[in-house]
Length: 276
Length: 219
Image 1: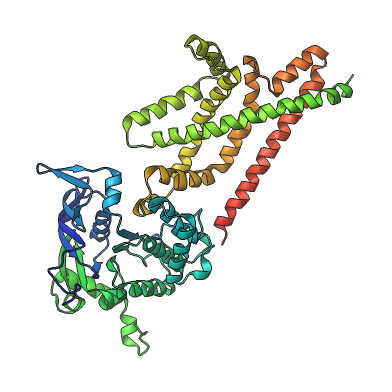
Image 2 (image 1 turned 120 degrees about the vertical axis):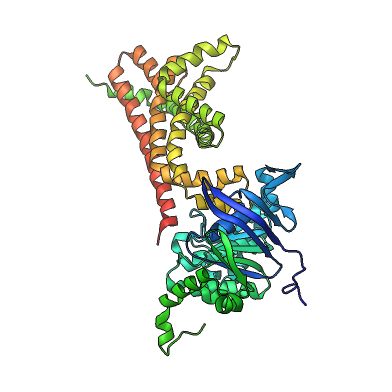
């Protein structure tokens, strides 16, 4: 039994009873989720269900209101003192999440830097890697995402799909242990989705631990080890893709998938179903 | 009678003095930019005392005439035991004053930066200072470049005020020559032309920077 399927392996990310409130609105209501090494976890659910908020809590881009999130065994964002939790310093947060890579829906490349600088600058500043080595590693990362020839381009000169691949290269350059993807293809024109998903597939097959918030059900079905369906701030269903997509009977999930399939019904009625 | 000979004769001295005008005004803009960045960051920070400090700073230096500020620093600094050359005190006052305006200019630029760019920087482990210097300031400068160039030209002109506290620069020298030669019209016209040319050069430099930044936006 390898690490991938061993339920006893210690999770890289362990979310325990996490609540998140914005004012008086409960967005997450007691989330428990464990992500183990080399697992791909796809998080699906309707808009506003809290799936992006969960991912942002795991990255501590949002402070969670209750519960605990452990990153490789370390409590994220807080210290427990006599049963009470205290917010730790930004530097300590940065230390605990140093092995998390994050890919944003809107790419969030820095527009005043070239693709290469976007990838190399954090290596120099956050990791203290000498300029030449940082540039070399940044080039290798751009090669990996298929952008060898676009290193000197500014973000505005790149297509959405290329920008997102730079975003992935920037995160990968920091040699993360886990990659979080927040709807990485939702801002892309349909014809550009494929190139980004291909990079993610390659990553998954190399054994990268990944958590992906997505509306790409095909990707989830093919690549995920675990699919998690979030609805109204709770995990309403989770399991293997087979389990969640075919056997799970939760009515909210069935409704959600029904809507998804109806949008794509055209492909099911023609002979020209595109290859997956 | 318009006396061109006096212009030709005093031009070398006026040009030499205009070097000081450039040095004083650009130095104060450079220092003022650093002050303005810090005050802008303070004004947008989470901390209430920091915001109060920034608000007080900006309201004082925008609310009191620069001439009065210069006179205050000229007469008050020695009283509290600070003995620095009047040129240093004058440049310091100019810097403090332009810092308040630059803080307000940059504020608009800072607020225009998408939050996601800062989040991306945090996620790759940049610290607060690195985010400020590598992401926020470069982007805010790009957003606000025309206003910053404008403020710089204003400071070149405002530097003429430091002549009242006995600092030698273009206006002060022009006054000296005018009173000793009794040819004020020719001398002040020449001084005005030099100010005009200095600001023309600054505007050109601003246009050049803007065209460089446009590369980043090109499709």
